[in-house]
Length: 344
Image (cartoon, rainbow, N blue to C red):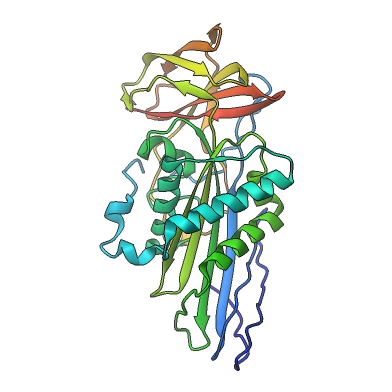
């Protein structure tokens, strides 16, 4: 953490500081009264996966640290003091955050995104986990990125794209200070994201259909985390088994949502994630999946329905197998789904 002391006195003037984290990061505004405040804010985002031009080209860059396949903590199991981590009237603040996102999308001529309860639970759990572990990262301490958390912990097949934000405010003597105007704090977080090109691109991605937003605060340390989980929902899939033996074959069956066409399926592989220490968590600025595409199963179509046969075998290696489904929406190829299967 870093910051600059606010001059003593009774000024309410905001203080803005800048901090760069890789391709995109931003410090947001805060204000203080009395003895003065130390404050900082940071934002970060997921590096979107770029759909390959053909099934086996344009492989996703494998820059992520190989991350354990142990369950990440859930909101219920994170802490006995979990209620202390939620700001007052959380649903109203989430509704405001959703409205701000859709105001910015409308100003750009884009369709609004709808609220998604599963994405909101994922976002809230990650915001709380970052505060409990006192870290700031798209990965968690178990080594899960947003795609792992969505697919393995929530059972979601939708493609997920994440923005994260951190803010802290303290008195000059280091004591944590309260957040007095929560709606303004949410507005400032959204404004900060929109001033950062990478985060703005995530918010204004025309392909996004849904979003869930988490907001958590630890008054004992004076820190806040906000998380946006955007979804692309263009296919409905028959559930895949959570675990399969190596070299298993499984039928993929799905149906296109209205407006989507030309489904394309990729299989990608990554070793089982490994735990990450707190000092490692804060070093990566954007998230890139570690999974490497290795196969493009043929897709059979029948109207809006499609199917493919999946063979879970990459060089006879156990690990995480990603099933990535790309579709065309408004003339653009987008990642529509990314369920995962544990293969042992």
